[in-house]
Image 1: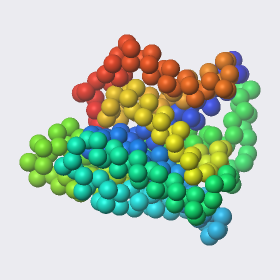
Image 2: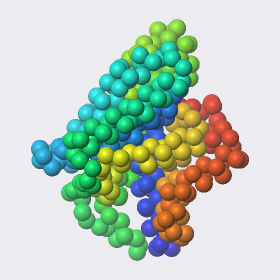
Image 3: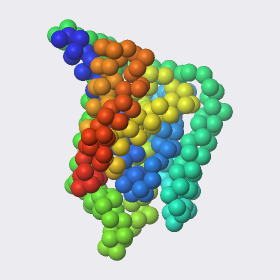
Image 4: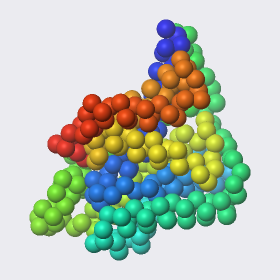
Length: 289
């Protein structure tokens, strides 16, 4: 039972990070109806921005997280203005190619500035709590609390604010929302900014128990795509539930099977679930709501 609860803790840690990244991807897909492959690079930029603020400028962990969120939100909004907005009337293939180009550009930029070496981010929360035989590092508990707290805040924002309602309206029917006077350009900028914040917070939370390097976003974004497809393309509840499912599956799979198969489990689950529910866990009515 102790080992079972330990894997639940580890799974919720991974699930929280995956869900945050997948949520940003889901929101952007809901607005543009294209997969933003550059989202993994936003995650990487957030980690390096927080690392720079902490190591070079001596900023504390939480201010570094805030600074990284602001930096990545700006990068994401610039990407929307300079890369995706000019292609809004093009075929779906062009924005996808542009997103891949942006991903490679940001990774090359990070490698030119920080090099290809692995970096480790320090955390002020080094302690360990033991409850009922379960060893719980404070950083992992922090990840779970912050990740799911941010998801709740995003849900409340989408449900109970005017700007949140405009995002939902634009995602459900872009043309109809525009006819009702909703500014599509403003909503797209806001959505990209939110996705950047989610990616930066996820990266800053996870970096102290992982490594920071230029290609760190590649595997994360692949799993975020799996989660987005698994939960139903454009579904916010699906992104959250899918992230938790993948996180728990990886944790239990690594423990009971082998760590070597940990990264394969997500794709195996995708094939299994889509063979039963091709539309994903949530259907179209649950999209971005």
